[in-house]
Structures are given as C-alpha cells and as structure tokens.
Image 1: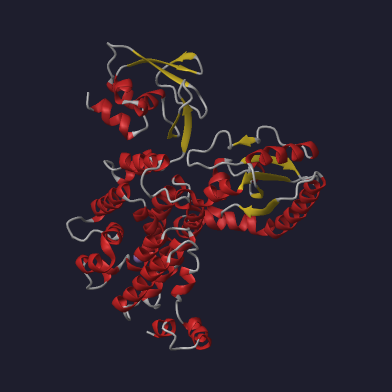
Image 2: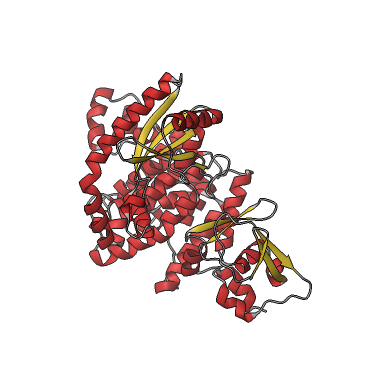
Length: 481
Ligand code: MN
C-alpha cells in the first residue's frame, strides 16, 4: 500500500500529499484522537487497511465505494471523541455481513473487544424473523449488546448518521420507513444519552423524508426571515459582548445557534402553529470558565436588559434528565425581538453536545454509566412500539417527597408513578398526595409536581386502573393480578 510505503519512508511526503486528495486518509481520522498512543494509532491503521482490502470494489446504492461508508462512519465516531477501539470497530462494522470474513478471523486479528462491538452492530444473522418481528429482534439484539458495552450503540448511531447522509440514494419506497425509524428510535436514544450533536443531525437529516409536508411548511416560513434574523442576532451579540467587557468580563466565548428544523417543527406544532411563541428559534450561547461566572453573567445581563418572565431557567442547579446543564434566559433585544441566551461552562457545553460520548463513561465503574445501562436494561423486555411509547416519548419530571426525580412519559398518572418507583408500591397503592394535597389516584401528573404515594397493607390493584395508566410497565403488572 502506498501509505504503508510512505510510513516506511519509501515515498516522500510531497507525493503523499497529492495522493491524499484522492484517498480517504486514515491519518485525518487519527489526528482527531489527541490522546491515542502509537499502539492505538497502529490498531486504527490496521482496521482501515483490513476493511479496505476485505470490501474491495464493493459499491453502495450511490455508486460510491462501500469502503467510503466505513471511512465516514469511523470519522463520525472519532469526531465524537470516542476511543480508538470504537473507531477501529467503525471500520469493521459491516465486515461480517458484507464480506466473507468471519468472526473467528476478526477475533484473531483484532481481539474479543472489537469483535463484540462488530457483532453487536451487525443485523440479525439468521432469516428466522420477518417483518415487525425482525425489527423487534434486531433492536433487542442491539440493546442487549449495548447493556454490556455502550460503544455498540455509539458505533450504530454513527453508522446510521452516514446512512442518513446518503439516504437520497436509497429507493424512494424505503426512504420514509428508514427516516421514521431514525427519528423515533435512534435520534431519541441519542437525545436520551445526551449526545445532542448526533440527535440534532439525525433529526434534521430524517425530517424531510419522514414528514415531507411539515418540512416544506416550516422551511417556507423560516427561510424568508432567516437571513434577517441572523443579521440581527449578530448585532445583538456584539452589543452584549461590549456590555460584558465593560463590566470586566473578558474570559469567555460566545456564538449563536439556530434551532434544528425538526425540533423547531415540534415546537411549532406544540405552540399550535404560533411562531411568535417560539422564543428559542435562535439562541446566543456564552461559554465561561467557572460555574459562578454563569450566575454573575446572568446578573449583568438582567441588570441591563429586561428578561421575559417565566423564561429564566436554572438547569445548573436542576439539570435536565439527560444531564444537560445551562442557565437560560430570554431577553428583549431593544428592537422588538426576543432572544434566548444560554450561559454555561466549557465542561457543561461539552456534556451538552456529546453527553455519554464525552467522558469515557462506557468504561467500567462509573455511577452515571450504571444509570444509563439500567435504562437500557429496562427496555429489553419490550417491543419496538412499547419502547417508543414508554422510553422514547416526551418526558415529564416528577419529584418524590425526598427530592428524587422520576421521569415518565407525558400523560402518565399517579398510578404510573407508583409503579415506576416499585412494583409493590403500585400494588399496595391506596391514595396519593400531589403537592401535599390528597388527589384521585387517576390524576394525570404535570412536570415538577411532588408526588407522595400512600400505601396500605390491604390495598389491591383494580382492573379499572388500566384505563388510567400510560406505561406498559404499569399495565403489565395490573394485568398480572
Ligand atoms: Mn453500515
């Protein structure tokens, strides 16, 4: 191989540079992994070379070399800051399904760890299942492997990301199904794991294929005012920066982000198509060094600009369920517009964009990892449609009297809450206090409520409860009795 020859010093780097333009360059990926050792870099080169030879001249629907898909998947994984093992697995993820190479060879050449990830990402090997069953089984297989090693899921998400980037080459009759599945399952899981960078990209790539009319509607509304809004925002950003500098704040970074079209669409539907109610269409971000700087900065901003009541949110003291931390406030710009300002530290920003992928949580022994694994384990017994309903739908956060947070799908009742704490609490439930007030147990809960379940020895679940529960988990236990 040319690259190998170049590493051995046989070809001058000048020639190599010309060659790079034509080739998917593995060194580009390696340069993304700042902490990799020489040995780890060599592992990635080995996986690259091996996949390139094994897939040979295979082509994808788009007519491009199959290997290009593997390269892009590995690059997506490296860009998330994942470890070298995951990147190497990215190169090899389709090798068992698409080539004659078998598991034994992969294990011998790359070890058990990489084989485990590659097998976890591969679809079902047998033809035992068809239609919806096949769908259920392949998701179950993926989750099962993920509960042992989170990297399986992250490789799968990066594989899906490149498949979505090339979805226009897939036969039209398949596009919608793939896009829906990406939105409802993969983007939702990425969001739940706090990998916002991935979930946003997956959502925006799926949106035009999954909900064509909605996409057309929202783009025609927002494209018109987009450039103008961006210009105003940049003006506003500069004026805020000036004020902060005057107050002695210099060590910070600021930029702005435009809301992803799909998440905008969801808000648009929620606000009953009233665009004026969407305040975070564009948001300005300020990234500082320390947590206390976040609060100081918020103080300075509120001292000079009027905030919109009810829009000040402290996700630092009360992080979102996926770990997101930031201060949010919406202020009047002075020329009739409203802008959301998000203030957070560098670490919080990294967490907000990369979540689980950002801090090597996939490695053993961390508390957060256990929570995520627990969440994935809890999904295992369910079908795809139940998983969508119970685990991946929009959530509300309910507090126990001790201050623990339980998240439930929107529309859950006090009975769902009882069962989500413990099966016995559900089975022995006799009443409920919501914010300290006795209420019917069928009451639909609202986010932020403090809920206390009253149990009694003689209480029994009632079949009528089935009409008032939302989660499959609660339903299952009530039916069993
Ligand atoms: Mn693939």
